[in-house]
Length: 146
Image (spheres, rainbow, N blue to C red):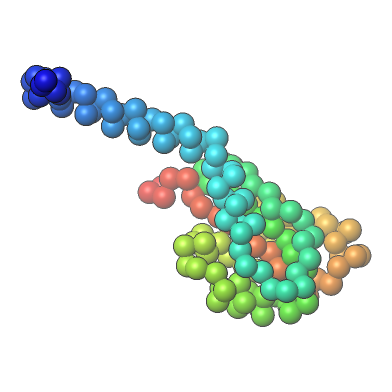
């Protein structure tokens, strides 16, 4: 018994392989588009954090076109170690690929594209110590060539 694949001409084989690659590419794109938020939130949520860290605000992500198209995700923690010590801990206890496009800053740091912003957050100022606040920020331009 001969294989049907051997009977195809080179042109038909090329067309079949091209169609299979196109379907795989489109499937990857269509799976990534609705799942981008889950993937980014998973990266933030799966970080190894210092003991005694308390989640103040959960991880939240959005796609924005303010200034340029970008993906932004944030999580706010209260950590007994303080911002700098928590930043050092997170950077040393997590692999580099998890920290790609992630910054760890104080909650009071300025950002005009922030999801959580201390300037308008009176509840946080009243209930938490702003010196111990850790702001985990994921930021990535959608089109890097712009």
